[in-house]
Image (cartoon, rainbow, N blue to C red; front, side, top):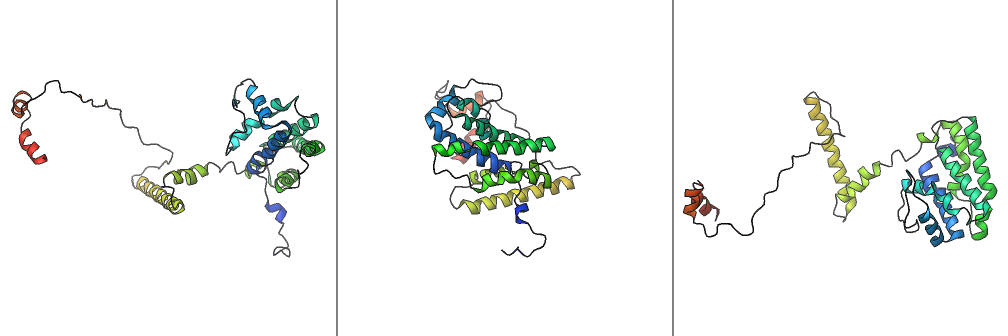
Length: 270
């Protein structure tokens, strides 16, 4: 490769840990697939649906097999109770492998590490590798040699080298998908939406810069998070379907209600 002769280039260091896409949405999603191959979708859904509700835990009343485009928060909600749904139904090795991989997920996300936590991180990964063969018994075509699984081997040395994973986790910037992609798509007519999305983002940026300039001219500070005040709610105007006094003459309106110039205004309108 072109970087082979570069004295200070190490492509292995260029791949930093990403807990969201490599673990939560990566190996963790594969784990659910492996468990489903052992239990079956209906059995796993039924067991998760029967778990008693608990504080801060999402209840999957219809199971998880019907979920589409599962978000990271939904994945975490599944992992928080998946052990309760598989114990007693899958082999012990599968339970141990699942528990080890879940422990790896949680320890890898620590914001502070020590020699003890890094040692526990390595031990949980070794425990998973020790028991993972049970998944291949139920799925002979299963191959654990894929990039996201291999990346787990680099978590411990990478944490020692560049720091904790919250520095490189893309979950921090995942919220920008809503502002820069989803909201922009909703503002389009869904036809040739890429051009419309770019134009919408450019205009939003221009409005932001103009608001900052106005605030500077007024000697204030612009806060993009501040929302405009809500308009006061007014009582809706209710019109009667049937007039209470039918067949009123225009002269009666001017005489009884003081509506002067109504006849001339009506002629102009008509």
